[in-house]
Amino acid sequence: MSQSTKEMKKALKGPDFLQRHFVQSYGWMENNKTLLLLALAATVGTIAAIAGANYYLEQAEEKERNALAAIDMMHQEVAMTWSKSQEDAQRRLVELQLKIQSEKKGTPALAALTAEKDTLEKQLQGTPDYTKAAGDYLKYFEANKTKPTGWIAGLRASDNLLEKKEYAKARDILQVIVQNGAKNEFYNVQVRLMLASVQEQLGDYDAALQTLTALNSKNEKSLEPIVLLNKGRIYMFKSDNVNAKKLLDELVKNHPTADESRTARGMIALM
Image (tube, rainbow, N blue to C red; front, side, top):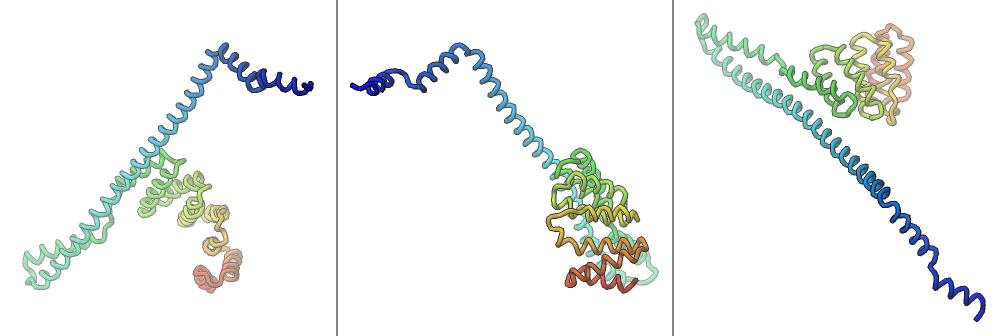
């Protein structure tokens, strides 16, 4: 038998590398059971902690969404109740007008019908009372300024403020949303445009221009017409017709078929 064959048989009879490694590892494990158990417990504890944290976050997020949905429901109920009352008032007003036409002049009945008609006409000129819902939206926003649900609540609160012409308060909310939601396309673009409009309404033209200039979007080219139009209009309000015309001319040249270009041509004609 050759020397190489003997060595091969000897190698086959003895433990191979994996076997020896297993035996050594097993021996180490036997001598370090406590350490291994502690490590295993720590690993299991970490996994459990992560799972628990994720579950807690999911529950918290669901609670936040439900809270916002409850405010939405309240807002919707106010709108529906007001809409129905307006429809009822409109029907009653038609009835009153017919009765007034058939009633004799100078009678107490005519006076009563006329008074009711006047009351209904005032009611029809009114608006829904969203005071409670608006207050709750604002509270929700204050508690969730860094979250998308908070931004939604903030937008709804600002809508109510704008309807009441409380532009400064609406501006403050929109500024926070733009700052915290800058990485979100909708909040970076649409809300930024809203903010610029409110700043313009307040006469803070420089701030409005800065807001529009800071607009950075992946759809920037498609937004260019409205940005140029808004900036051109703001420069007109600043009595800076040179810069206004420059921007409006750029709009008309680069986007001749855009709706904003028709408006721009009219504005240029007024200069």
